[in-house]
Length: 396
Image 1 (cartoon, one colour):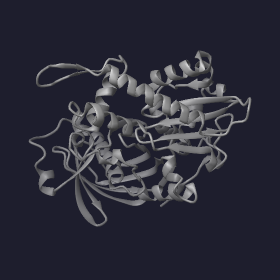
Image 2 (cartoon, helix red, strand yellow; image 1 turned 60 degrees about the vertical axis):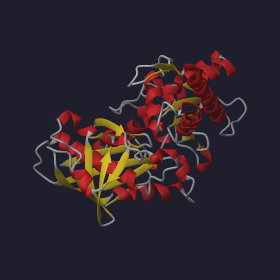
Image 3 (spheres, one colour; image 1 turned 90 degrees about the vertical axis):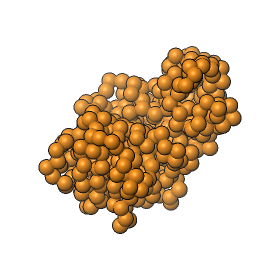
Image 4 (spheres, rainbow, N blue to C red; image 1 turned 30 degrees about the horizontal axis):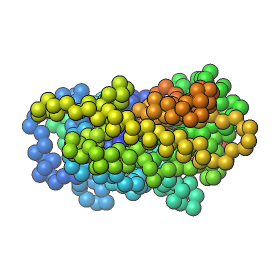
């Protein structure tokens, strides 16, 4: 199987992928199991539409065969999400690598239920790294290259053990690139996936733009030059890892909600399910008893919104009178849009909210869309992206 473009945002809570324009996502949950456990997970064959929810793989890693449940099938396991409660170095994590390999296996099985070949050749792939991790290195490029090098050349071997779709794949990648989370979303603010300019991009022509990439484990901020141009240097990037969304939820769970939510993932999903109606009523699956947590959760999310807004407003030095727009993207931004908007309107006024803060459609997808736009530009040789915008690329 030949893949032209494979872009991925390997998040701490959710991993997103686009392969030749086909989008899919899955929980970043990953549980290592024994070979015997791997062989006994399933009682029968799985339907094609349910492959993504039943990924069990063998990955050849550092000359050893290791077995994993990945995605939804792992999400309910006790230690599948231990990586989301601490800063997660994606350049070294086996879980990041396994999620990426499992995505290849899923796509191959979904597109070719009856495998005719065991080689997967990727022309171009790209990934992302958060700002906090890049700031650990003397130069951003050192860490970007380190991440890109994980997915170049003979990447490795993955065996899909999901019954009915068993196969062993050898993966080779010809070009690998890694870019910066948050900052990469700017490409999706200026162009659509068809690479045509967006009329809405004109609102950013004459102002500084602060990109707020609000994820589960980080709040990455990038200060863009007018016209959505790249930041001037490392000083135009900031990151908050001390008070993150998932840390905030875990603290709430441990202090007030532990009797009803046994782990962070269950609380995260409960809030995600109920946040749009702002009514957080827990219904026991065994007794049917209802417990209203609306006041507790609503107050907690309002407090977190205050934290992220103030962090954004004070992250960078801005000249007096300089026009600025704050753009909110990332997986958590759409969830907290109403809470963030309410805080801004209350503290700074409705006019500031309307004129200075932007909540794009598909905000949770802008990073991966940005990667896809860059990949399509390379694929189609249209040179939409200037040469000085192309960084961190490694060739096999």
